[in-house]
Amino acid sequence: MKNIKHVLTIFFGVFIIVGGIVHFVKPEMYLPFIPDFLPATLVNYASGAAEILIGVCVFIPRFRSLGTLGILVLMVAFLPLHIVDVFKEQPAIGSHNLALIRLPLQFVLIAWAWFIHKQ
Image (cartoon, rainbow, N blue to C red):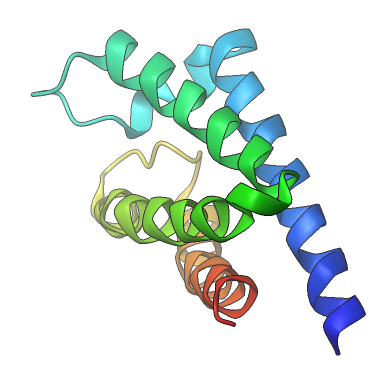
């Protein structure tokens, strides 16, 4: 079980780093998710940088626990954005069907983050 957990942790770390890089390479992908009352460009780049940092922490044994906790917090923090997206006339993710699929996926990601974080 320990080997499976380690593989899932590393995979999630890579997933988070790639997501963080995409914030910089393709910001238009994330901007529609950011609420209008927030400075979208700043929030996009800050969250991308945070994702990269948290993902890198997963690969450093000394900071792995902090990194996996960061992933958990990030997944929980993004949950309201995906809930709001389901109810938008034009969901940021593209369609209502995709938004309805994405929402339960967020709970899977939260459970995954909890699994890799807990000792």
